[in-house]
Length: 256
Image (cartoon, rainbow, N blue to C red; front, side, top):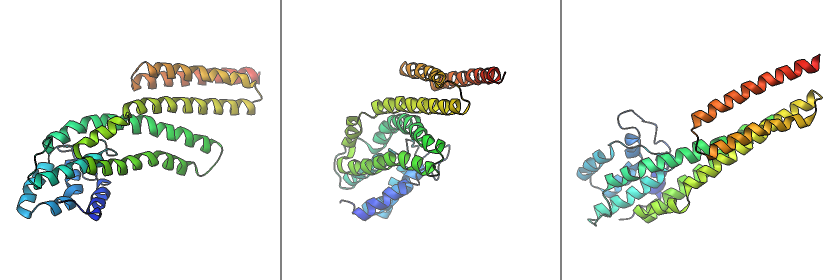
């Protein structure tokens, strides 16, 4: 049997609460079962539902923005199992197979790339005194995850296990790298913008602000070499401290 559109929408909205019952023993397992429950009740009789529910109550953890794609594919597999059809892969194996890769891709793309990129763009609005800057950040950051939640769920239910190819075809790991590079460029440009703005207030030569671009270019080149985030953070902190000391000496010299 195919689930009705109302039931699928119900499951999709419940996926927004995936981490509401997060715990150290099963991580998202309980939340995943909670989201699937309206559909499982339509597919199985009561005595079968208890057995299936216990299976989904096991350990599960992936990125919440890509979890709807997993849930929809699982629902398609559950329909096939209830109809006594041969499954291309065991449901528990499928969940285990995609959970870790989806988590790694999602962390890199959404939290490691998209979030700082959206924040950097919103900072330009904040620096100009525009009060809508937080709204700009929320719109920029949430547009892409919502699309993945919706498209992933639709394709997951339509294609089942083959929905993995949908994400592979979009080359998300490459997009994660490009998004991080764009974030570095935007944040570097914002830093240069602030320095130019400060130099204009101090009546100093604006060409001095060009030196702020050098550390950002260096960080961008280092990021492309695959250096860890911790190392980049330490380098950024060192650059900020040195820039602060240089700025203090420069303003003292101008005052004299």
